Length: 138
Image 1: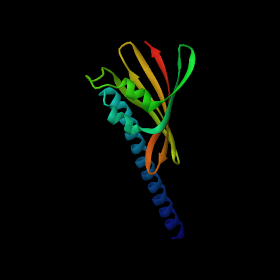
Image 2: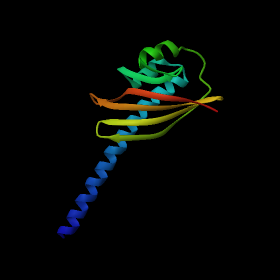
Image 3: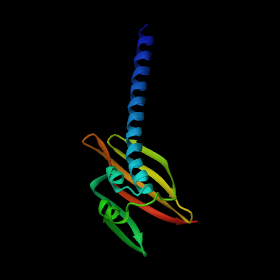
């Protein structure tokens, strides 16, 4: 009897952990989707929901390391207009406690962006705090 009760309690606690992980996964997925959907639809207001106000974006430009505030950068380049002709996908999301990272792919006709997002759960909300990316030609 004791063994059955212990087994049952163990199964219940494992299912609770799985449900919590699924819930956090969906929240991280929603956060990075704000970025993807905002960029696709040229909607800065949606895109900015993904980022912490001090988030950085780091990349190589003309062979040089470049670091900028992500929201300041996107505010300059994301302008209202027709929907972007691109396909997006979330390749993976990894979560450990209150930190996560995600790999995103954004495919255009002649090139792709591979984005790596680092997120932190701040005041109950997942926010991108840093982004690095690579532009890959086709």
